[in-house]
Length: 277
Image 1 (cartoon, rainbow, N blue to C red):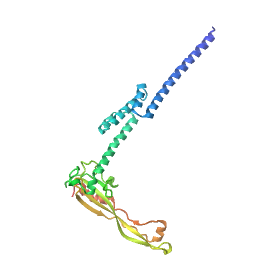
Image 2 (image 1 turned 90 degrees about the vertical axis):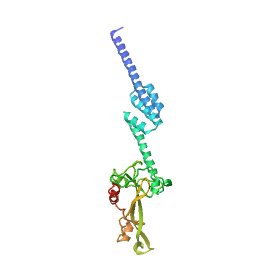
Image 3 (image 1 turned 135 degrees about the horizontal axis):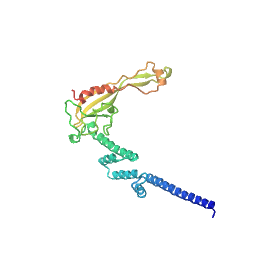
Image 4 (image 1 turned 90 degrees about the horizontal axis):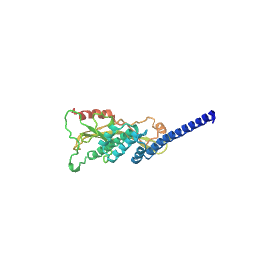
């Protein structure tokens, strides 16, 4: 056999060997990616267990183990368990999922808190028995409060102004709550404008002028007794001088004024909430 032929065969053998090794390596990489894709697609306790059985030291092994911890926490769904788990987690996808689930506990607490306000807003405590809220005493210091919409007594809701009051005033913990501020918008008809249509012809149309007042009532959260109340008048409704021209470009059924300012209500509440009466 000639040296040239032997060298050629050796070269072909080496190339074939390298090809086989490359194919095996590619197959291994493909299998790793495929196994992880299957695990995340099914996204279940069983799918991540299968991945770890195949790839105990795989590229995504740590995340797979943390997903198993996540599903275990779902089976024993207590807030304390989730807090402990979140402190241990290292992989970002599992941390985000756990953080989102922790947020649901806050949502449930707020929902229960609002439902507990219903008898206070309605002024109808069960058999006259006090609630589990904190007792209110007129003394210096912050008396924690919440502001609710007076138009929803059956299913109380935060009033939009609630978030605008100082943070140190507000609470969503029933055991700390001392005062409930009920804000109720009240429409007052203060007049009406007459409009006879284009060029003064046609039937007379009367357009109400509405002043928007805000009734504020402060009640003890424990007893539902009224501590203080006041109605703040809104601004007078507009009365366009050239009514016919105005209505041509602004079709309306009534003229409404503006609500009183939140700042005015807050100033009135301040000595009550901060115990400076």
